[in-house]
Image (cartoon, rainbow, N blue to C red; front, side):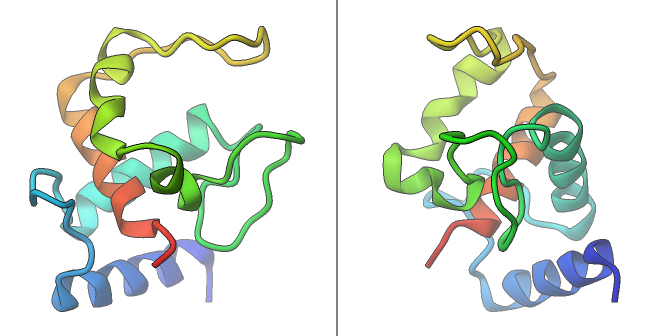
Length: 115
């Protein structure tokens, strides 16, 4: 089974069980939004970060996305994603997402957090 099919099947199970909702239910958790969030993560982030539930970060020290909620609340990423994430290291590209993409991205991140 391909990763996309596995992800969509996992996302569907999470939606049915209610596990894919953020703490306040603000982020979309439908399969299309989650697939969009995954695609954004793969395009913009996967060259360094582990972006799925079981991969390894390509860049040493880059946190796995499934563990981000252990570091800080995911909703705290809304503003940086809209304005452009800037970090203390030069390798992180600066990019900004449109509002719908932010919601899809954060919905995806919420859906993969280690439980």
